[in-house]
Amino acid sequence: MNRGRARRWATPAAVVIAGLLALAGCGGGGGGGSSYKEPKGPAQATIDIKGGNFFFDPKNPQAPAGVDAIKLESEQGVHDLVFDKGKLPGFKLEASSGKSDELRANLKPGNYTFFCDIPGHREAGMEGTLTVT
Image (cartoon, rainbow, N blue to C red):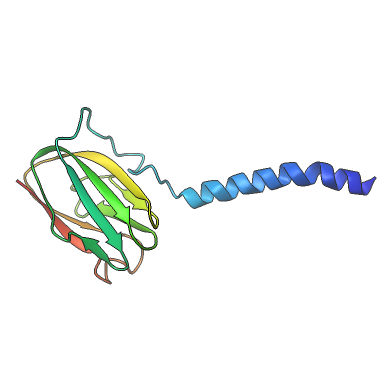
């Protein structure tokens, strides 16, 4: 009888544990913090940035002012992309090896410093400047 009870609970428990592990592994992968609001409408351009151990390529991309899509593709490991000094509060892209994440942003002319905020990544060289004209 104990064996039957154990089997009866084993499958639902395994499903719950698997679900919790899947959620924990997601790490908010849809991009953007909960406070970030994407602008409406289509993007006029897409800025493609690759991230790897420990680089962004291109390191200094350019974009036209207005609504643009920013896409981060990770070539190696898990990386994210955030902007410095409150330029785009709540904006965050996250991608793991072979995956990408993308959000639209309404960019005003100027320079936007971006970096990977995973501990140690910025210090190892994962920083760049987006120039918007």
